Image (cartoon, rainbow, N blue to C red; front, top):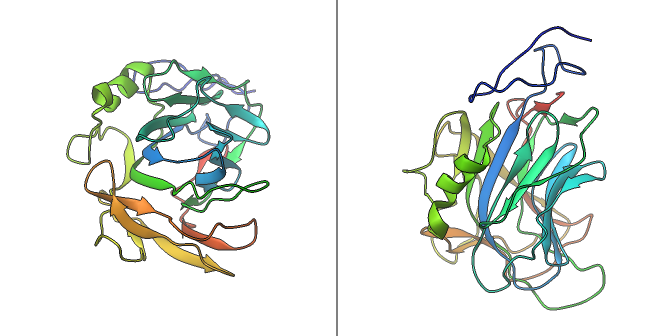
Length: 245
């Protein structure tokens, strides 16, 4: 047990047990816009120990079977806004203007090091191409956006691009801008320059630039992936370490 009490940007104390050498778990928040046209499966963002996964028309964030997911399904035709993360105790998630969903408390979790983005999709069965689209990925470290912060970022459904995003605690921001219709290579972070290198395994997926929520975004209109093949954009940098990492 530790008697160290740490506080977030709003002055709220974190629970003081089971923490790393810094005296507490490291919270994080991820936000992005996505389109997904069917109830297939996709891991849009993930790192060692955690993932944001689309499955059966719902979106979840979590680790080791402990997840947070909004109750409502996402739109299959329009852009959707997702914000979620780990607040030091539990995972949290919001979809569009939904109420915040919380997971069960997490006893211990190492989240990282590393970070990945992907527009790979797959079916646990069969079905139509969902044409996954991803845009405007923001990642905050040492900050769990509260519901008021998320509402400001959602901006009534219009969203905020890189020029307007809240930069307090912002670690990286991938605008996903490129030449329409071309294959995406390394994805460049507009804030601190953290690159996500393209990694093709086995048969690569289609990962191209196309119309996004703001400007261009990343999309896949081609082969589905499997657990062992496909394309992801990856960093193993230790800066992408959260929770008890």
